[in-house]
Length: 73
Image 1 (spheres, rainbow, N blue to C red):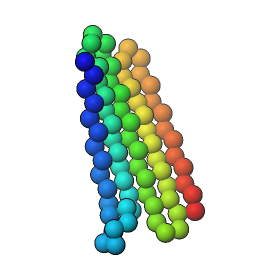
Image 2 (image 1 turned 45 degrees about the vertical axis):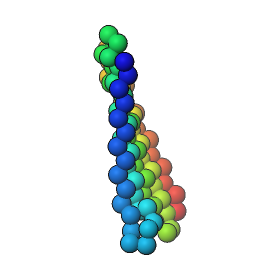
Image 3 (image 1 turned 90 degrees about the vertical axis):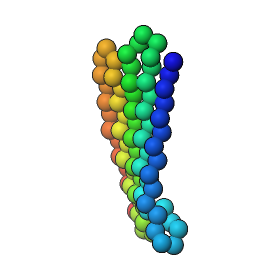
Image 4 (image 1 turned 90 degrees about the horizontal axis):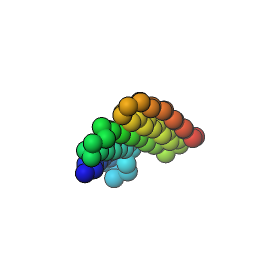
């Protein structure tokens, strides 16, 4: 059976604009395969620029991890 949990947190300005958002997704597999995977992404924006950061990782017999980021002005 696969279990999945998603957590989203936002920072919102008084005028209702989303300034930052962080999202974490965790999945686990319980069918005899010991595997856990997680991805985290963060988006930050203002009137003149925005930035995004992401990380994914999984754990099983062999581990994998990667980072990526981007920004624009």
